[in-house]
Length: 333
Ligand code: SF4
Image (cartoon, rainbow, N blue to C red):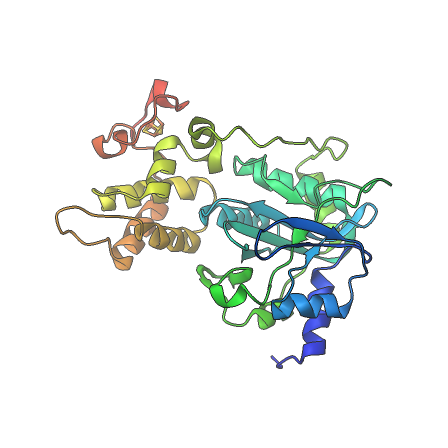
């Protein structure tokens, strides 16, 4: 793939990350305070962003159309964007994970030409609902603009100041724990979604585009998050987010079963578990479970018809939450 000069980079960037042409967003590098700038989105604005002098935020929605959609996961939990990518792939769409500026991830979907924003948002909401995360923020946040507002901007990727810190960068599509070595090459080989794909998904899933419910973010109580996040039961959420100090092999196997049930492909489950293992703090001088052991546990979970949550196993029961909907009829393998 050819090396791009500055003008080509600017052009490529603009082909993905522009919307409204006479307004953009930014934030103060010191205070983080966001503001709107009612000026044209010129090449200079983009270059200033890419160089790292002033961040640029894009208003994606133009009328009732958008050529790009982003989902904003504001937790440092890689399993969430991975699950979204897997969900989109199941519907025949490629999507790309960006590590956002300070915490969490954006997942971007790019369309071959501007699409009706409502259709794109309904489809993204369907994938999030399948994941058990319907309240996750989607940009554009509205189906169409009214005369009073420009909608909401989203910070664009590749802000020069943060790129060297591994933020605002895309991860390797097949290896999401790794930042992609060549961001421009990745953008050059992005697979865009044809508009007709949205119609096919809407039709095959029987989605009603007259109803696109607005989801409020839940109160940030640990209980709600544990019960609704990612379609995983509380025990799996606890194990996955906190890591463990004991029984790493049992926990690896059980997490693999849960991730399999969410529809995550085996390779992504293995990557997720390898990244999870780094949170483990084994006691009594024991070592962290090796990559090889993780691979064999995950393959075992995927090869056989395991579906149980392992509620009866003392190791898993140690992470049980009495509010779990399954608590009243705990099942074994
Ligand atoms: S009831 Fe079973 S699935 Fe639910 S939290 Fe407890 S151990 Fe996990």
